[in-house]
Length: 160
Image (tube, rainbow, N blue to C red):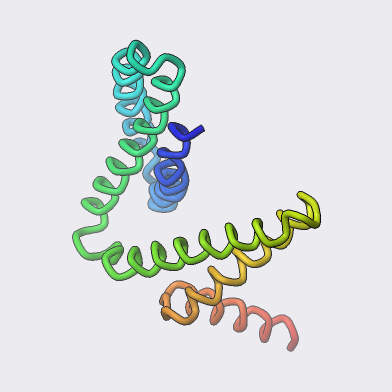
């Protein structure tokens, strides 16, 4: 599981980046990235399966996902032009909010564990969502403000 966890960031970022290419009417680039990722993943699997056994396959999959996300991000940045993605100011805020959320959910799980798994999990998910959302607001993440403004505009349109 630890080897698979390495690739979670790559998997989640990759999904968003593929949709960004589709939104730009570019369906060819994700296919090319997928082919390159498959080649890299196979090479990694062949290399890592001997020293790590089945863990090597999991790690190869995770590293392939990170490779895919990195390549997609690089290609999207080139397609849009440098500076258009503005990840430099966003990433530290999201990483900080995620780290604090992780600590809060872990504490919540430990505190609520005596009350049963369902209560502990539900409480941890609720606390995690609340802490993460609140931190994104406090850290003034521009995309969150834009999303809230969009929802408020839509709600006002529907009422009239």
